Image 1 (cartoon, chains in turn cyan, blue):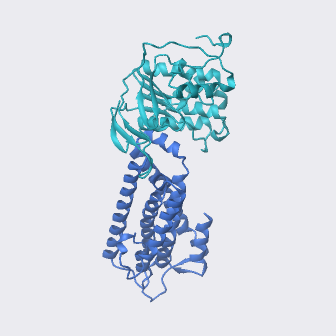
Image 2 (image 1 turned 180 degrees about the vertical axis):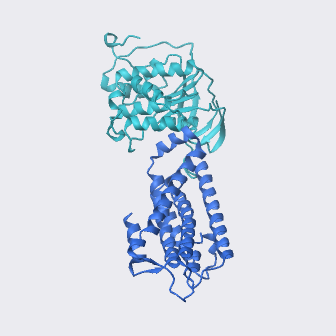
Length: 246
Length: 211
């Protein structure tokens, strides 16, 4: 899939949200999109998914099946989680409930199937959002901050799901502002700054890795500050003793 | 719903009227109601869910499904509106010797008037929906302006009656002492179909470019 000189703004007189985006994604690629709040990550992802159309330029060769996990799941709907997923499966042309059951089980949603969407916790609603995007294996999976609100068990599922999509020849775009990308070691990184998308070189020859311990409460601020200083933050993890086995 | 009942009781409240004439007015008053309920129906879906539905079935089918659902709801509401006055003797046959159309003919042209009002109301409501107008203010402006213009520009001697669907023209013709000719009905039907085609094509185009 290729972005060719793609420009986007939300209204005719609004400033450009994204300018002259010229990037491409190959089958099997995982791309992590980094950037501050409001930099244009979500907009870039929605353009990639095809739910927004570019104002100028084109996006070519988008795979036919796209799964999109929105940043906030639209929970204001009169369905239970199970009903919602069955309806989304029907929209995707699936007749049985096999796929729904598979993802409900895999994402640990079984006990929430009969809960109304509006009564779900944020993390559980996020899982329903994830499930609907995966009912049919997508050629392009677009994840907008998929780790938000997920518990530690569910967080670990995401790298596995990403790997399944890329192993079958699909591409995955993920946005991340908290340094969760340690779970996706082979990912390509793009940085969005003030509407400009900059693919980062994957290897920088004269780099060293500095490990820094900070108080848990300061982790987010530190990551933001280090990035602002031009450093590449590779990840945030718990101390060695708590580190989950990989 | 409540607005619908109020409209019905106003139309049929003052005793019984001749079928064609009553149904002609009923279609006019239902037009803004149909537009409004279409906007409510289309706006009930959260924006993000609309995008998810578009990804699942494609932009065209998603837009068409919304319009189809609104049309079905419109037909249901019109059916209720046409049947409801019957048990209260709100509809009567012709007064002998007055030249008024027979009851079946009056009902038939009444059905036609409603069938033409439904897609017109749905098209206006779709153009006022949040997916097109984006804000509540713009949405209500389109809805109210469309409904008012349909009446004002539909008045006799209007300078541009073809800008709006022929709901007023139809009611006027049905209120005449005798039913108009088949040619008139054909003209009104063609006019309504053309207007709806243009409005719905505009809706499709705006939906494609605005999201």
